[in-house]
Length: 268
Image 1 (cartoon, rainbow, N blue to C red):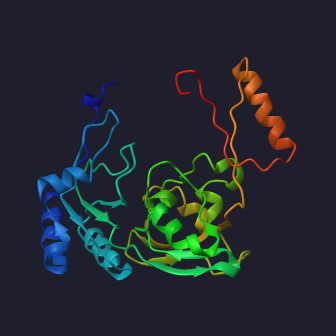
Image 2: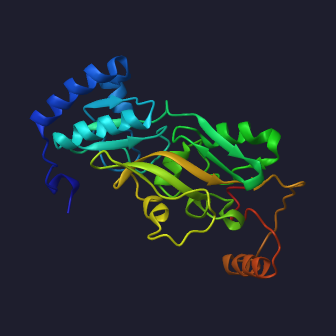
């Protein structure tokens, strides 16, 4: 089936108009409807054409995210969460219009607990920002998806990277989070305790939900110690199978390898 054969998502023009007025009055200059900024917040490199939202909101607190979501819910208008726009897969496209909630101004590092190897941040903090802040503590956040993504976006998409060999993905490194749900209510998925048997594991439900269940407004992350020394090497193999067998043997022997990448002659 061709993309043009798909039924378009129905737009709620009356509801969208009402929400645009509400948010403009509430947020002032932190609510934008210009074509350029709307297109920027729907950029995609997929085959899907760019479909821009009707407005872009820049909240600074969880309470403001709640207000935005409640207004949209009351008028049945779509909400699209936006971090820094590093996604390439069309996560921020708006086929039915609606409001893009840009969390880049929610960029505070709320707490760092070196003794407990964790920290709490707002969703707009980027991976590089956090690691710069942690530099003097001897700790770092190990998930490295390549782009300087926001940590809220990394949690929402369950990002990983080459460090996943040793440190896992965002699934293993988000300890708890707070999110605004579709009705505007907040949910906090856990406390500081490392282990809890108190009900469902809502953290892992929301990590990787890609904004379909709620908008993350804060998250507590697991930190790691910076290695005392780092070294790298390149090993040639006669075949992909031989390379894979070497990787399996390395991991089975318990060698603490952080990154393993397979490259061909063109990439060297």
